[in-house]
Structure formats: C-alpha cells, structure tokens
Image 1: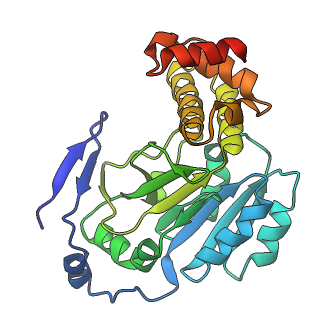
Image 2: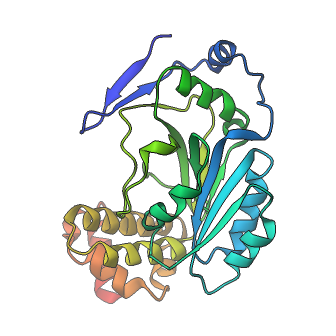
Length: 285
C-alpha cells in the first residue's frame, strides 16, 4: 500500500493512508463493523464538572470498549457519582485533585490502563459511528506495521458554528508512549498515521470555550507559545460566533472585559478585516 508520509518538526513521521478502508480491512481480516466490545484498547477520559455530559459519553463508549478509565478531577457537581454509578466490571473510576487541565492527570491515569492501546476522549467530544465500528481494524493495522499512534480527524464547532482549529489530534496511542503532564502537550510518536475512517465531533458553547481558555491562559503564564495559542483561541471563538449572532451577543457575557483585554487589546484594529467597525465597537464596550 502506497503511503503519503509527512514529518513534524521533531522528526515524527505521520503517514496518510490511501482512502481505501476496504483494502485495510481485507488485509487485517476483520469484519466491518468490527465485533464488539474491543478488549485490546481502553477508552480514557479525564473530566471536571461534567455531570451533564459524562453519562452520555459513557453510554456511547460502553458498547464498544470492554475497559474504560475515567479520572474525575475534584468537581463541585455529581461527575464522580455519575461515573461511579455507570462503571462496569473492568472499568476504573479515579478521583484526582483539580489540576485545571486534563494532561495534568496523566500520571494518575496511566497505571490504570492495562491494554496495549488507549483511546483518549473528552466529555465534550463525540466519536463517530464509523470510527468506533472500525477501531479493531485500525489498531490491528497499526500493530502489524509498527505504528505507535493514530491521529483522529476533528470536526469542531462553537454553538453549532464550524470553526477552524486543528485538523485532528493524536488520540489512539500505545500505552508505553505515556503523556506529558504539561498543558497543551501530547505523546511523541516516532511513527503514526491518520485514521482512514471516522472522526470526532467537538462542540462547545462560546461561554464554556472562553472560560476554559481564560483559565488555560492563567495556567500557562510565562510560556509565550501557550499564551499565543490561548489568546488566538479566544479571539477566533468570539469572531466566529459574532459572525452569526452579532458582537452584542458576544459582549453580553460576563467574561467579555477580560477577553477583550487579553485577546483584542494588543491587536491593531487595522489588522481586522472590518477594522473601522471593530474599532468603534471596542471603544464603546
């Protein structure tokens, strides 16, 4: 099978497989949809104050994975209770202190993963049917060809409005890769590939997204790359929603003065495509 390789800055190789899942399934000799549940991969989720969504996510994952690990960072809602009540034999629910972001709980989660592979997913994400139905085939292909990780395409939206973020994330990985506990990090895989089937839907409210990135901004103070990324995410989220719902809607949120200060205050209004209009709006806010 002819591959289309690309390389990241640190020399990691990421392959793009031909868009022919039938050939991959034929090579692996696994029927599609794959038999359920998968016992060779553990689904992993780190949550904080996700009472409203963790039950829905677990209900989605349980038919597909024999083992699920949920780490609940100290929450003020019923996240821990919901996760514990839904745990089956073989599932693990871990209580951790509140650390502000999921990666910080990596060292707590890692020992609970007993399978060779892990699938990392957040409570505000939704794996597609074709991704879940092809998991066993994709992982077996990775094992056969010596890959350490699999990138999953993302379809990101804010309040239902499509937004440009990353094309995808490294979410299926071999356990031994580990995970850095630093903010906005991922494992380093010498060889990985893009999943040839499926995606993850990622939808958030504007309020949730901006509050998250304001928190990340504080946690990442002193790291210029993180600060640049976090402010760009806030700025893009506000602009995306404003294009549909208007700036009055965006500015009505309690966090707007802080978001304006960190994400728009240092920008030249001349850099905005509607610079005169934006300058007037910001002066009035």
